[in-house]
Length: 453
Image (cartoon, rainbow, N blue to C red; front, side):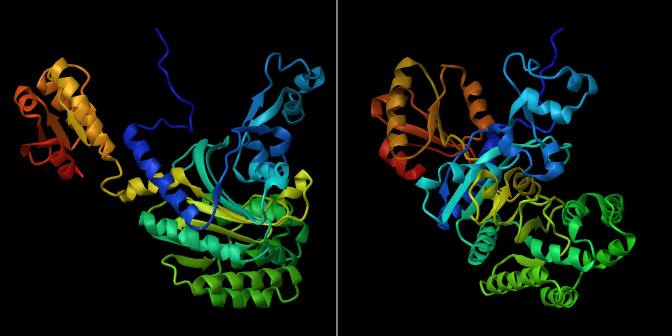
């Protein structure tokens, strides 16, 4: 018996209806990107592992999908590595490429590789799939789309303000109520200094980035395992649950980080971003969240995440400032800041809240019934006129029973059916039926175009 076909866990098929909804998401986000002056690029689905490895921290490296070398991929693998099952060192012998984990690192590679052709600052957007060997769950997939926008070649915090404004505009168009959570990696570094563990900043950020997934108690347990003293953990705990207004949180941080130059610089940057966005009268809430860490190691300044307020879901957008991401590719000193919209999670939120516009899933507007060869030939001419006027239409390909053709129209949600029979051929007219009301009228093709438009 043949095995039933299936797809890998964490991936999905999308029906025509679902694709119509997804294209609405992509088109909405792209239109806002263009509104803010971003230009589109694309990069390959796979990159050299040397490009990807070491850019996302130890946790990220484990989630990279590696691609086995073509042919005899074991030919260069030493026997002792095979015998010891030392997969960490074995990977470099059997795999030279991997699927991209995000769009930011490939973008950094792109900037360095094409630097002589780019005008700085360079504002790019990119809408493509990425892959992560994560544990699949609701809102978390192994293959998913990211919609990224980045600005490189500028240190100005006005870029952060523009990105926050752009996030607000995107979700305002979707009708999703959100909170934009902000923090700064310099503030986190200052906190690490204040609790006496500056050397543990990576462990701290990686751990607290999991608060939403595993809870504060488990984060504290992980920090203890990483060697952070209990006293430092006890000092850190209340900071991760700071409450009050943004100004009240900043006042607490100023008091705590008064002796940390790095921490105070982060507070200064945060104040500028918060004050500037407040002046824009955004629809979205903007909130300072000290527990926000963004576990990726390349962030150095402002970091942000977006949460939907009306549905339980993980982050639906996020990003931040990276001061020297291109440095790992030999181009030092190029600062950048970017955001990424999680199209798949936005898709789930819009489905849950049923926020799609009525015409999002519009399909064929007019189906021409096929009564035979002579009638079909006339229909083709009428359809050419309708399509020239921008009206989508199709002809049922066989001269089947009327019931079957009407069932096809109903199944596709076609709002109008057009009929050209013997009488319409003689009078050079068409009969148009509204599938919702049942009303029908016979008219010329010009009148039909006016009515259907």
